[in-house]
Amino acid sequence: MVEIAICLAVIGIALISIIGVLPIGMNTQRDNREETIINQDATVFIEAIRGGARGLDDLTNYVYAITNFQVVYPAGTPNPYGYANNYLTNGANIVGLLSTPEYTDNSGNLITNVLSGGYSSHSNHIVAYVHSISGPAVEKPPQDNQTIQADSFGYRILCVNAPVAAAANTLATTPYNWQLAANLHELRLTFLWPQQPNGKVGPGRQTFRTMVAGQIVQTNNGQWLYFYQPQSFVNVTNAL
Image (tube, rainbow, N blue to C red):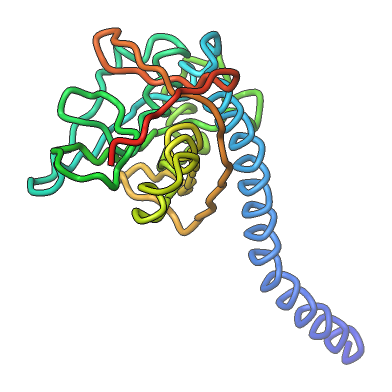
């Protein structure tokens, strides 16, 4: 009986140690799975924006909201607003909104030289709310159970489409820098995850950066949409 009691005590101590380590292992597995999903989804969004994609209508199953926290420069108050869900009806609208340049004028037109001054502009801060594209098949369309959809892994994307910075003194003397500022942009997508039911996001953060060469064209389909044209470039004259 004594030997059995000692064995049970040893087994109990071992089980306590295993149970203590188990949550850490499960959390690590969850974090690795979420990071893998983010890496896969980031590739989809970067390629869609960089290529000016028009036919990715499957994005409507995952992007359920897009907002723009807009600030008027040089003096103004923030103006947060969102795009209606009935506008996110096709992939072109989604990609066109996510490609919104960081700076536009009051009419939504592109600003190719942000250093020249003398204008009133909008600084655009685009945020997309997304259900993960990758992940378990049970969460994907045609799944219409709202409980399962709400419990699925989601995240936010902060989209920054910024012109390449150039020194003001070199713009006046080097026309090449005008071409560079107009035709080369830095695309930054910052993923924040997981999206929680209370509207907040968890601790996950990862930023993806890429340089995109090409002209940005704009169209108006009820809202201003912007698309990269990687094979075309705009000629810019020196206005300084």
